[in-house]
Length: 104
Image (cartoon, rainbow, N blue to C red; front, side, top):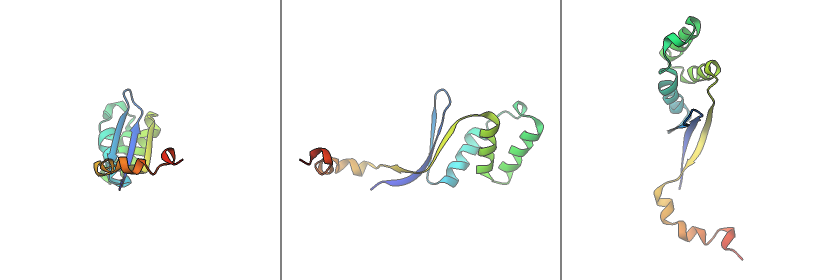
């Protein structure tokens, strides 16, 4: 049985993938890995302070949204994605026999 996770694909070169237990945790990860790693001197003072305030107030999603709007970095976010577990692969051969390809 698969678990649900949240994930994001940051379309950098090369692309980066982030996976978290839920959307709130994913926003925190993106805030730490994208937003907070932006050099402050690269931003106009007002925008820099807006991002800092959002991070200080733990408004992770707001910080990520503002970062995307400012930088134009494409970030595809998936709030609930199946994460398949190794235990599923163990019963895979049996399950395959029940798929449409094997039904005549």
